[in-house]
Length: 139
Image 1 (cartoon, rainbow, N blue to C red):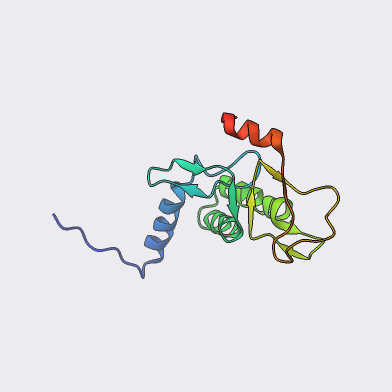
Image 2: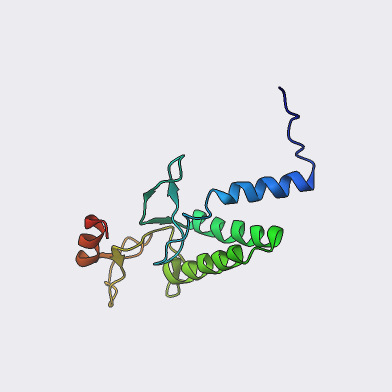
């Protein structure tokens, strides 16, 4: 039983395929504490709940906004807004007028007073010991 190969020129196929791919993330991508989970095993298990990467974070905004345009499903619009808000909250560095490349959510935070010297490439983040203990306990 050979099925016909997919028609990659068909707008209907491309729409359905894009929404099928997005369905992988439906019940597992949103981190209620902020942003989206970025790292998954093939079965959908989230294997890193704290690391966030700028490229992946922006991709979540674009893919969910596109899925909303394709489907009209309000969940995708809400997720795009959630992901965009996280970019502004966690990645945006207004003082340096840029964005952090990687953030570790739930254990790192910026010091209230910046040090006089840093590497000039990476920004300064402190580990919050209480948040790190909570994370290690799995809470």
